[in-house]
Length: 123
Image (cartoon, rainbow, N blue to C red; front, side, top):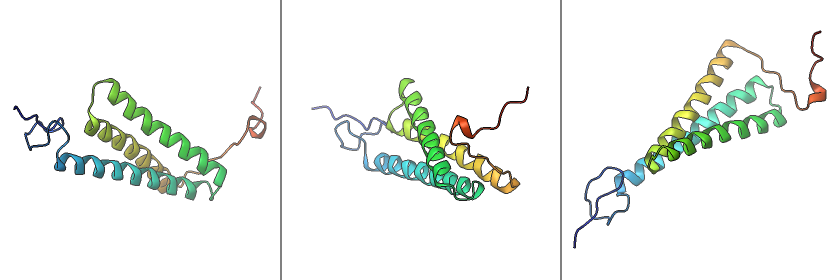
């Protein structure tokens, strides 16, 4: 019987076509990195928004949706689980870098909860 290789590294490690141990660890590590970057972005956002829980929740939703969108785009382009995890990691890293940059520059973010809270447009 012909053995099938790992779908990620293409090496025949006796996994019968399933991800090998090294690739499984790489995927898990990449997923942890993405989660860590999301947490970093959220922490920096909280610092900028003076700990506003509503703003933090909205930002968390925004970031996680962006990361998931990157993962889905990679999947639509035919990426395997490792490629999808890498796309999510890159997206999460981008959010974290931007929030860090904003925090380091001391940029204050304004959280506007509802249209009624927004300032009137200038005529």
